[in-house]
Image (cartoon, helix red, strand yellow):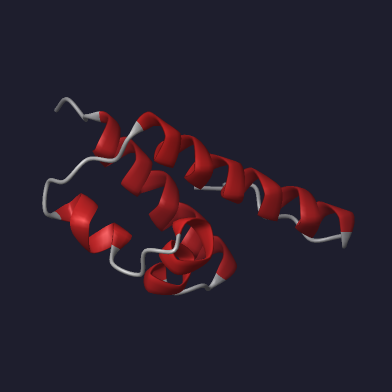
Amino acid sequence: MIHNSADTLLAEIEAFCRRTGIAESTFGRQAVNDGKLCVRLRNGKDVTLDTAAKIRGYIDGQIEQAEHRGRDLHDRD
């Protein structure tokens, strides 16, 4: 099965939300001010490269902050 970039991004978001216990709608609002981000990705919509970079930057930033506080948010799946 071939995954497109939206599928890959959605999988990254889902994994982050599982690890942190954050709702996907909350993630979307905090990362890019779009509470329906995950719904849109699941429905086949794509995001711009800039938006994808913002999302990944948000995830990376949250991981860095958690590590600074002594928590491990790296994917263990």
